[in-house]
Image (cartoon, rainbow, N blue to C red; front, side, top):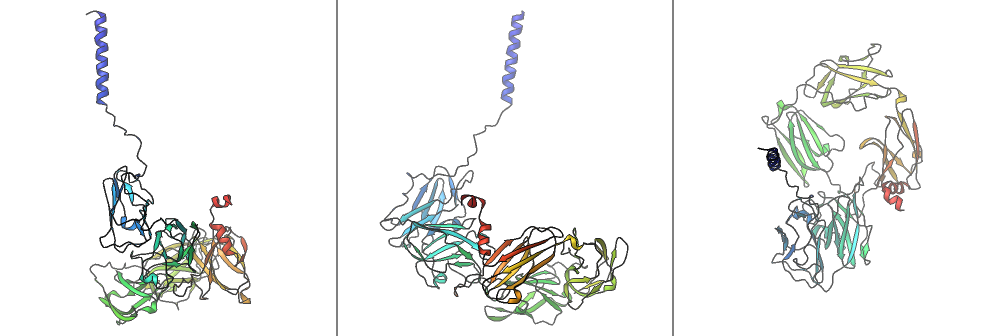
Length: 561
C-alpha cells in the first residue's frame, strides 16, 4: 500500500474516532433562561373586566400558561363581602369564580375581587400580585380610593395582614354585628389601599381578624379605629393611619400544662394575675408570676399530688379546675439545682457598688451563707458576705459584700449552700465573677421639660430589654429635676416614653366603646455611651412626637424633601 493510501486511511480513522467521541459525551440541553415572569391575563379569552350592569354569572379568567391558586381563602378578598362564599378554583390555564345560587348582589354597587398573591404559574410559582376583577351592578364603576397604613399602637411596627374596614353606618355596635361594606388587607409594610369606592361617609376600622368572620371579637382580636367619620369625595384620600391594639380585659383562664413533676404552667388571656387562682387542695405549693408573662408557674411537691384542684373565674363564673398529673408521661425535675447565667455582662464585670444576684432554675427555700465562699483570686482573701433571706422562697439569691475593684472572684457553693423548694441541694458549684471599677461604666443625665400637666413613664432600654423606668409628672414641681441612669455598660441605649394619660405608671391600650385611643409611645435614641462618660440630654415632652416622626422617615424621604 503506498503512502497516499496509508495517509487516507489514517485521516479517515481519526475522523471517525472524533465523531464517536462526540456522540459519547452528551451535553444536557440548557432550555434557555429560567422563567421569572408571572402569568399574564388573556383578556380576549376571559370574561370582560370592568363590566357595568353586571348580572350573576361564572367569572372565568384565562392566562397565557398553566396556573394554580395558593392560600385562596386568605388571599382573595371580595368587597363588598358576599352573603355566601363563592366557589373559587383553578384548572389548567383558568381561574374561576362561581357564585352561590342563593347569592343576591346589591343594586348600583361596584364589586372588587382582589386576588392578592394567590395566582401563580404552575412551573416556577411566579406570583401575579394584586390582580383585581371589577364589576358594577349599576351604570358606572365607582372610582374613588382611600389609602394609609396600620401600625401596632405599642411598638409602632407595621401590622401585616390586617383588615381595614369601611362601614356606611356609624353605629358602634356595627363592628360586632355586621360585615363591612368595603375592606382591604395590609401588606408587609402595613400599607393598604381600597379602590373603586363611591362618594360617601364611612366609619373606618382596622381589625386583626383571627377567625376570618369579619366581626370584632373583643379580648381575642386587635382593633383600631378612626376618631371621626371619613367623607370621601376626591379621587384619592391618603394618610388614613390607624393604631392597632388589643383591648385590656380581666385575666381570663385558658388552660394548664404540666411541665414536669413539680412544675406546671397556667395560661391566661391577657395579663396573668396570681390572685386570679386559688389552690383549694391542702398541698404545699407556690405560685410565681414573673414580669409581664401571660402565665403563672405553679410549683408543687410531686409526692403529695396526683391531681391539683384550683378555683378560677371563667366568663364571670367561679369554676373548679382539676389539674391531672400523669407521672408516666411527665419528666421528673432534675435532682440538682442549677445556677443560671448572671444577669450582667461578665466580660465587663459587676459594678462594685451593686449586689450580686444568683438566679436559679427553681424556687429557693433556704440559704446557708457559711457554705458560700467567695475568694479574691489575686490576693487569695476570702470576702465577707451578707444576705437578706426575708424574701425567700424566691428564684433569686442576693449576696452583698465590699467588692474589690478590678478583680476576678471565685464563687463556690458547697453542697447544702442552697436548698430548693423541694428540699434538694446540689454538688459543689463554681463560677467566676468579674468585679469591674466605676470607670468602666457610664451614665445618662436627662432633663425633661413639659408645658402640660401629664404624667410620663420614662424607661431605659438596651436593645429590646427594659432596664429601669421612672415616672415624670409635669404637674409636680418636685419632679422638675434631672433623671440619672447610672452604672451602665457602654453601648447603645434608647428611651421609651409613654404619655401616661391614665396615670397608673404603665402603658394602657385603647378602649373602643369609650372612644379612647391607646396611650402614645415614643422611642427616643440616645447618644452611644462610652466608659467613664456622662451623656446629658434635654427632653421637651411636647417635641418627642416630632422627633419620632423625623426618626421614622427613610433617607429617601429626607432627600426628596
